Length: 454
Image (cartoon, rainbow, N blue to C red):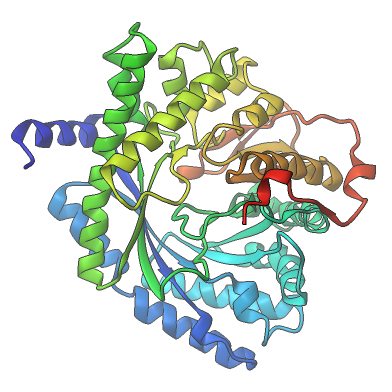
């Protein structure tokens, strides 16, 4: 039974501590839309998404009003489009047409983003995969709510370095294609290692081929709640600290479970997973960096930061898995720069560098996320940064990702404003030494020895 004190506690978490359900994401399989006729394919995609998702936003708003729980985003994830469009698309422009269809139907049903303009190429690329990847700059420049992700590595298969090298070029071309908007297209493009099939968070969401025809996944976020809880145990030992994070994560996850079950029932769509990720926003008090500060480091990036983040991530997961049988997606702490005011402050104070961020990604939920770099950064350098992050994911058997934004026309010391949840970011310096000969070798980095577990 839920008692009065728990109700009051949850209300305070919502009203004063920025607790929210960050997203209800409706996953939709498009495998039954496949045809070799491009016009027919676009019609099939539009109709399937519209019919499945037409009540999503209305239902989310109703749940939010009835329970008093903010539901910030309603989103759609779809089957990776490289699989869906392979039979019909003969050139990159054909895939761009599909992107236009996705943008149109997403706006029609009123969602914030649609994810799944994606390809899974961890071991090799089909012709369709390559065409989709080549279409990304134009697709993201000509749409508003379409998000793209490419999985280029996994613990089981190794790292596809041909794809990594190509993505270095694609990130740079996407930056150029959207330079009038401070290279905003790159904020909608993620490169993954070990991408999960059920991630509800953009820009990396897609509907995996192992999933049901349609599914409801919910992402919950509460950095402010965790920080407030830790303020009450300031100076206590690690045992008390860990117990506090676990208990708080449990409560936050229960809120997500309630929303997920209600959305599933009302939409008639099976419930998939709860993703308990501490995903920050630019709002004051809604920062993962502020949690690290509360744990005891002066700024994110100070000595002890990686250990503090490892502790936080682990305790969040332990609390979450006790609250729901279906915790999945990414679930842990996100460390984006532009979306976290505390991280921005750390960069501006000189406490946080790209290299320290890379070290932190060994223990965080995702990876190098929403990091603005100089617009003249070479595509081979971007590929090298991607390769480093993919290696961390592959060796550590975890999801890692890269969302770098080379802001055309801007350099170190300047700031770029993205607006909304994407926030703003100082341009961070990048190591200028070359990795050209490394990333240009071609081929695949083999899977590590501990991948052979069959």
